[in-house]
Length: 138
Image (cartoon, rainbow, N blue to C red; front, side):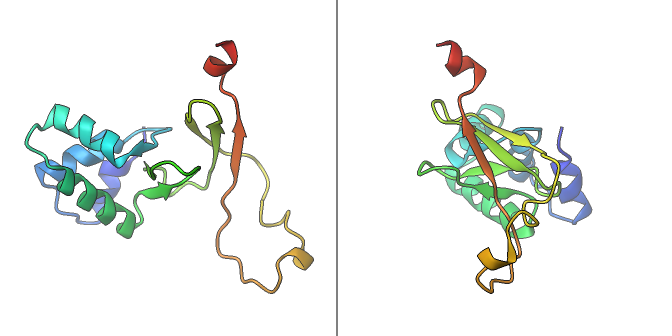
């Protein structure tokens, strides 16, 4: 499980019932839900939660740096609570399943100085694409 709830509490983030439910829905490993998926799961736990509250809460968590917005294709953004452990993503090209991966090495070191074009690089995002075992069997 990720430590999203604990991190938010440590930051002094006011934990309303709505915020708690959104954080609980997102908490865990390999969680990459869309805002609509977060809303659907939150409604199952707290029927009165609005779509706007979910979107606003997700936006606040991103601004705090406790959740990462992930865009691996032209589909809806997904929200990843694994914000404090460097990782990349492995995406199934057929069903869209996303898994966090932690390869060894430094992807920034793999980019030769001649290919940096004078950029001061601050972040690296790597997305591996393939076919998950479920789709490969189908």
